[in-house]
Amino acid sequence: MFSYDFMQNAFIAGTIVSIVAGVIGTFVVARNYAFLTHSLSEIGFAGAAFGLWIGWPALLGMMIATSTASLAIGALESTYTKHDNVTSAVSALAIGMGILFLALGHTSSSAATGILFGSVLGISHRDLYLLITLAAIVLITLLFNYRALRQLSFDEAGIFLQTWKQKSVRYIFLIMIALSISISSQLVGSLLIFVLVTLPAASAKYYAKTTVQLIGMAITFALFGTWVGLTIAYLTDLPTSFFIAVIEVLIYLISVLQFKKNA
Amino acid sequence: MIIKTKNFRVSYGDKTILSHINIEVPAGQFLAVLGENGAGKTSFIKALTGENNQTQGLLTVNAKQIGYVPQFRDISRDYPLSITEFVGLNFNQGSRLWFTKTEKSAVEQALKRMDLTTLGNQRLGLVSGGQKQRAFVAQALVKNPDLLILDESTASLDHEHKVQLLENVRHLQREKNMTVLFITHEIKLVADFADGYLLFENGQVKQGSSDELQTLTTDLTTRHSEDEVRNV
Image 1 (cartoon, each protein chain N blue to C red):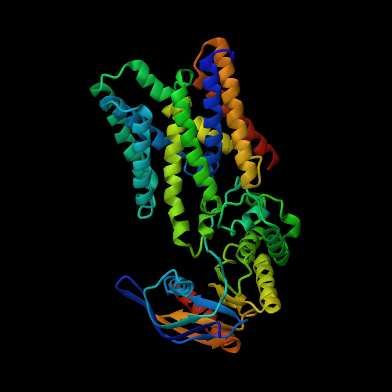
Image 2: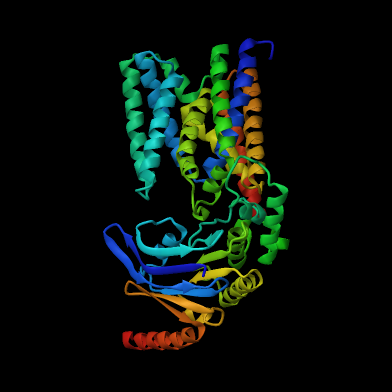
């Protein structure tokens, strides 16, 4: 299986994406941003379609759209309490626009499917370098702000006497979510971001008791799903995203059931 | 004096919330902060901590470190962090993934002071309400504050746990000579613990001693029961 270049690339990409998703997912789940994350991925779809229409790389369009949207939602969040409503309105508009851009750009249906469901087996060496660069940016930024972000995510109410730097963490975090979504969509597509960003971290919550443990568990679950998913997809010639989704959902269900039984 | 104000005024937008505040709080006192909802208690505390700077007049706060226990926290049953990790969240600067030795011993100290040593490894989401409140206080203690502000920390507890929490806090105050501002509606409960009070009423702040607090308690509680009778 590893004798094929495309499979090597797929495994490297899958590993990078799983690590980024596990790390950002831990904070996303702790801060209850699962819905925001899902909506951002839909907005990412519109951005990618826009990119293809005007001749940019899909990933660039996606990054611009998700970053802008996450900042806009973050800014609204401080004044509106019910930010879920704002978020769903924005994402409905985004999907509509995505369809429009696909039609305007006469984008082929295979390109559209790639955006929506991922195209991990089509990842080139150039894509890989870009992916590694973006992943490094996200991981280093998160590490740099680790403690402020940890408090923001796990105990926002306890934040007291913030420095200017700590206040900026909210926005840094939103942009990092946007970038992570753009990265992850390469693997599972924008429709299944949940599968790698939210589900492994949500499962980890039922086993781990410290932030570092949570991150470690989330990465492990994400990696497991990705590696096994890629392997089965290779053997069966069926879509990778499907297998990753099934594995992550199973892990999640088992975690919840076990927690219910013990708690 | 750890807190001193002279002709101090707190506003919010165009609205004056409190004016002519003249109080002097000596270090090491346990003060009950009383007043109806919306009387300006939180606005005043925010002015104290420097979060609200729409103020006029003189305010001196001589605290090196302020600890604050907020009123609302949403900790669901599946909240993952252990009490130890939760208490350590207060170390909120830098990028270190694990606690330093100093931080670790500070966390252990704070847990010990709130009688939580044996519960440190428990998930915060699964402990009782009283234990959660003690963990909240422990988190505020972790940076060794000389001024501790608690915002209605006893509100959600049953009587036994209310008393236990207050005893814990009073012990701290005496042992460490810590100044405690205890925001509460439960005047009767706090009257046995406090060295004095700050009463927020009609845009003013009145300061009184513990004896006056006892009188005030009888006063307010009788007034309240009369109200109740009238409402029936």
